[in-house]
Structures are given as C-alpha cells and as structure tokens.
Image (cartoon, rainbow, N blue to C red; front, side, top):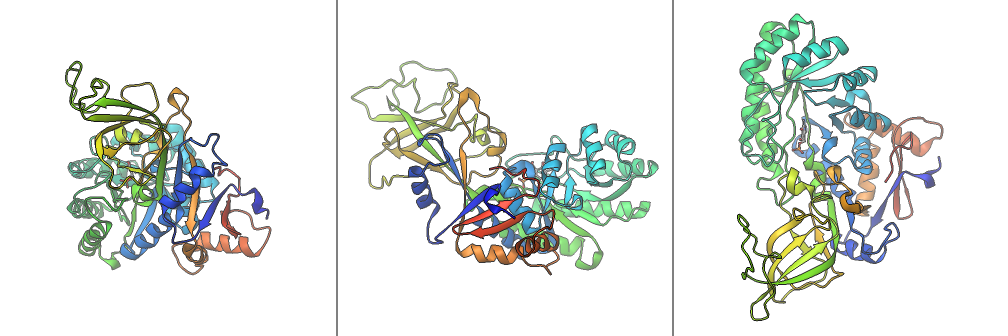
Length: 480
Ligand SMILES: Cc1ncc(COP(=O)(O)O)c(C=O)c1O
C-alpha cells in the first residue's frame, strides 16, 4: 500500500518538547500556511490517546461513543476509530463520515431524538439501527421508515448547573416515559434502553447519580411492561480540560458508584456514553497573530455608550496624561474558532508566545479580525504591551470550536498541524495492535493486517515513516 499518498500525517516529536515550543517552531515553518502570519492549530494526538487510556482505566464498564459534533476533525475521528471507540452521530452526514472510515454500523448511535425523515431512511439503508427518541411523533416516524430500529428512550435530567443546557430542547420527562413505552409497544417497536445527557460541561457530579437512578426506574417500568432493555447510555457532559471545575476522576467515581448500585456488573446491561469535549478540548491549541493594535486611555470615556460595561474599547479616547490601555486585533475571532464564546459559553485565556515576565501590565482587550463590533474575544484583562506581529496562544480550544467556524469577511480557517510525542509512538502502535482486547478488536485486526499484508480491504491504516505517523482511509475521504 502506498502510504505516501496518506490522507494526513501526524508529526512525531521529542517528548520533552512543550506545545509552546512546537508553536514557536511552527511560527517560522509555515509550509502549509499561505502566509506566515496566518493563524494555526496544533492538535496533539498524544493528548487524545491519553484521554482514551484514562477513560478505559477509570470507567472500564462504559464504552465511549465519541460525539462527532464536538469536533469532526478527520484525524481525530480516524484515531478514535482505530482505538476502537464508538460514535454518536446526529445527522446523515456524520453517519456517512464514520461509515466511510470503515466504522461498523453497530458502533454508531444515531443520538438525535428528532431526526429528519431522509436521514432516518439513510440510517435504515446503512444498518445504523441504534437511535434515540423522546416523543410520540418520532415513534410514528420510525415505525414508517425504520420499524426494526433499536430504540433508546432519552429522558430529561437536571442540567441546570451545566455550561450548556440541553434539557430545554430534548428529553422526555420521566413521568411521561411509561406512556411513550406503551405507544412503542402498541407500534411493535423495539426499545432497548434509556439515555440521558446531564448537560454539556457538567458542573455537578451528582447529576449522574440522579440520572442513573431515574433510568433505573424506567428500566423497571419497561420490565413490568414486557420489554427487556439492556442498554444504558449515560450521554456526555464530561470535562475536557485540566482547569475544569470538577475533575474527570470525580465524575468517574460517582458514575461507577451509581452503576454499582443501580446497574450492577452482572445485571446484563451494556453501558455506553457519548463524550464530546472530554476527548478533544485539551488536544487543540490555537495560535493567532496580532495584526493591529490601538492605544486608548484607561477609564476616560469620550462619550458614554448606554448599557456598555466596556473598560477597554474605542469609546475611551487616548490621553497622554492617563495610563494607557491597549486593544489588540488578532486573525481569528467569534465568527471563526472563537464561536465557542457565543455557542459554548466558553471562557478563554490568552498566553503570549514571547515571554513578557516582569514587564508592566496594562488594561487590555482582544478583538477578532472581522469588521463587526460583536467580534470581541476578551473584554478585559491585563497584559504587558504587545507589538504588532506577536503571537498569542489559546489552549484547550478543541471542543465546539472548529466545527462551527465560518470564513466571514474572508478570513480563512486556521491550518491544523497534528503532532504526537515520541514516547506515545510505541503505545499507539501497541494499542492499535491489541487484537485480543475486546474493545478495539475489530479495528486492531484490520490495522495489523494492513501492516503485514497487502490486499486487505477496509479499515483505517496507520504506519510510522521517519518522523511521521501516516494515516490512510480506505475511501480516501479523510483530508487534512
Ligand atoms: C446528544 C448529545 N450527546 C453528546 C454530546 C456531547 O456532549 P459533551 O461534549 O458535553 O460530552 C452532546 C452535546 O451537545 C449531545 O447533544
């Protein structure tokens, strides 16, 4: 097989190198960027792999089905597919992407409780049978289009403290569950389990306990009605970055404990989850260039803008006698990767690439490149004075960022560079070759065959070549 035509490559590097050092190198080596000052992402695939191992260690009973919506980057999807995770897809296109990566339909859950009819038809044609529902009309639609589907009832849980609430839109009230199960039974539909989502960016680990207890009650009702459900889907909500208010370890403890109480090991229930941000948030670092700068005066307003709380903005006139404040303009903003500020209620922290330790700090605001006043990244912080052309880094930029960015005003999306520390090279190889591990079995065998024999069709293939890990999808649909 010709791996030189690989769909993307991951550059391996000395494990002692920090992401900051890698960013510094990329600033000068802009082969894949049209212009040297274009913004770029570093995706540390080692971080994704570490998250996978951590998940397996801390939540061994729970099979992760990565939520594709969170970051559908092809290299991330291919890596997770090769490691053996399942996938949560919300649309025909997401399903298609995963099938083209040779992921078996049985490893996909169509986790959108309100599906477009043609997408449901596509799921039927491609045997993606596991799917969620939360309302009566959906049951009738499924009966017409895909009567053999395996249905998972999504219930409402308390997500009031989460970073992004989903309960406003989805989930049947547990009190309504009995009725929906009755309708499903009258329609002769196959309900195999219960799912929930405690809200994205969950800030209350006990939300899982309550939701798992609630799911147990529905299992008991279903059992009484004659259904024998055997799937529990605990959704997403897990933290993706070290700075999250609650550590993943705490969530894992609480979940293991609740599963032990309500769904003990020998109860015959398969447990899956739909983590999104957990796998990708900390793997992506964004580097943006300071393209322009404006000096204003701290606290002196030329005119009042009603309702405005702006501390550092253009409504503050420059005044030589006053302490200066700075506005910086960078080349990615809320219409691009920082859409997470609007859609994901994210809070981001700027880190300068140049070391400014011990320098005086000034009131600062940071703005995106588009000509829209809404395009502000940081309303107010304090930083040393920066020069036009300097680089600013934003860590933890992998979740709900690249997926919804636009090219508004003609600003191109940042280029992505994939990296992998050398010390993970062998563990990645090992992980991909663990033929007997039930979790990654199918993909690992494919991978192994790829390495040893020509002519095997299907499967994602990875191979190390010099300093790079090359990946090729069977249908060449992965492009990066
Ligand atoms: C149905 C469903 N599953 C999983 C996720 C992923 O959630 P998270 O990124 O919080 O893990 C989402 C996010 O919106 C979702 O809507």
